Figure 1 (cartoon, helix red, strand yellow):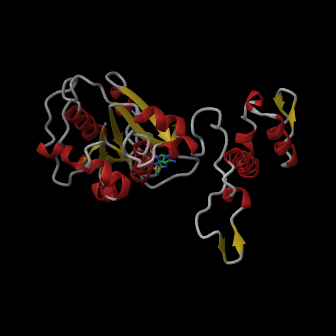
Figure 2: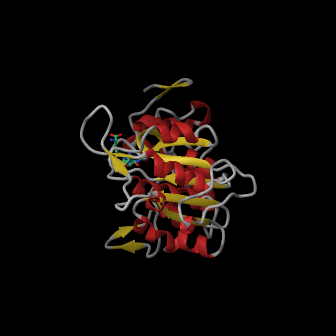
Figure 3: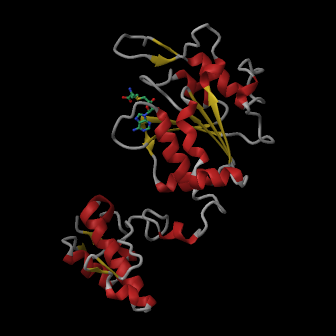
Length: 277
Ligand code: SAM
């Protein structure tokens, strides 16, 4: 998998060399390139922003550097690069990249989207700053590649860099070979499948008693059926307590009698074939 990141703050991406991501890079499982957008500016001040048409506060990222950057990274579709040789881009044997543009006004980034992205051969991330990127950049890019505007949540960050780090980490751990134990992915909160709307329950490790707090007996019992049941009960309770809107999305067809009792005890009764909430 190849990831290209365009930003005016390449230093933000130092964590890509650390931990799981650093190892995935060194092992050649994921190729990650960080590009400085200012390489594709041509004035003395390397300007990337200008005042917004229509007035209003803040600045908007100019379309020209973005257009040249995308042309340089995806050469077959664009004019020759004028962005300098540090671009490090280049095609991927006829593969068309998918462009991801973080913005608070995008579609939500979810585990399901991370799974989808992890299956892509090539992703390009465009980190906005100021009031965002001139809208024509996305419009023009859509003509030659798939483009997603993606939000990390209902809050506003200062720039797209942190959002991209979050997405890259969530995507990378889903690439086969990146995690030591891939099975842990299927147990995660939001893992696609029947458990998609369930949060993961509490986890414990040694020692069995710490500061007078004992690990639940069932986890030491060796009874795998009982452990699975206990974990599911905990997941149901935690989902109702912390994310009732997710619990409302549980498919009643996936709930057995015991699940329904646990949900009812947690104040979330299942009414026949429908969630009562
Ligand atoms: N004026 C924009 C708005 O209200 O939608 C906010 C711009 S924000 C200050 C600057 C940049 O931060 C955005 O272009 C985007 O790249 C990034 N950003 C901020 N919040 C984000 C979020 N919730 N999800 C993804 N990216 C975000």
